[in-house]
Length: 224
Image (cartoon, rainbow, N blue to C red; front, side, top):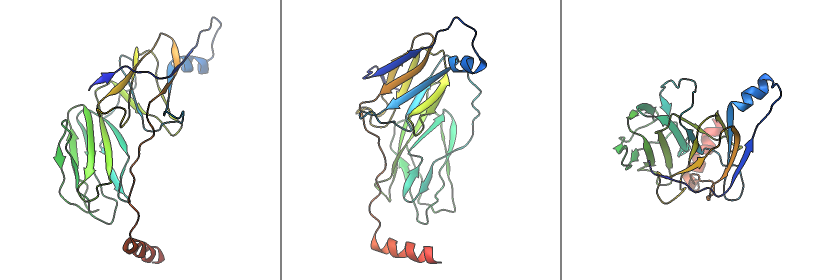
């Protein structure tokens, strides 16, 4: 996975104390809180923040879910480990045909309804861009992590990680023209907080307007 080191804004906080500390303070010193903002200084959700070289709880391999709801992929960004199984249920009342031309995992699922949920294993790390042959507006990403620990920011743009890493790796769709590019931010010993501003705006899927026929169908369904 290609990396680059561009940091537009980093706010660094340090925690030092010579006096006895409480259990809560000790826990805070063992945790790195990363806040990711967009170019307008707004919290950026779903950014992937990764670290290496720290002890963390064992990450068990479970089957991840990339659903299709209201003609949208859900979630927009899914993070999995190498060799993870991803299930592709269809929660819509229409058929979808999911595909990817990404080098790391090209595939195409046959047209299927909400009675099926095919699974695919993602053996190699990288970025898998998803699309639907039936609905061009549908797009999502599977981040197959090459790092020891990867987590996503919440709606406040924040994520908590074990402290002690030397670098933080941040990925988000359209960060650069190369989909695999990450921002690499160096850390210093004892650092417990980090704020990074990415030179982008929040991305999302934009569904087309609901047709008159679909509106009539929805009204009938809601009245039943």
